[in-house]
Length: 137
Image 1 (spheres, one colour):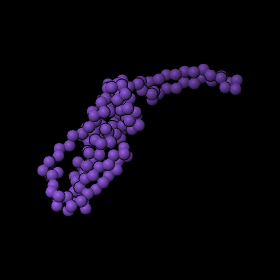
Image 2 (cartoon, one colour):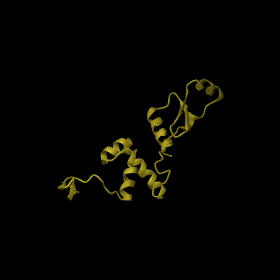
Image 3 (cartoon, one colour):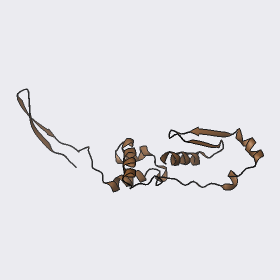
């Protein structure tokens, strides 16, 4: 969309004509467009930064839209939740195994105030998805 703005102004008694040609930077986004952009975060591992660059917006805009859409009831708090497969057999352990593995436990405090505890042998991809899921909630 091109914006042709012509203003006749005077400055210190001198009449000037100002003409601005070029692409208008302020865009109007419909709620369905905002929702599609917010929901695309995490698809195929896409980060907020990548999505922001793809749509030529700021990361903060995505965060603001997420909050706005939640307030309007268009985005549920759990809509960005990621489900990670868990091997229940691997989670179950004996008390003796627990003592041996306790030295390899890691505690991670997230910026949202939550704490995650996991073994030091956790897959980094699964851990990344888990952190994103917890911080999105």
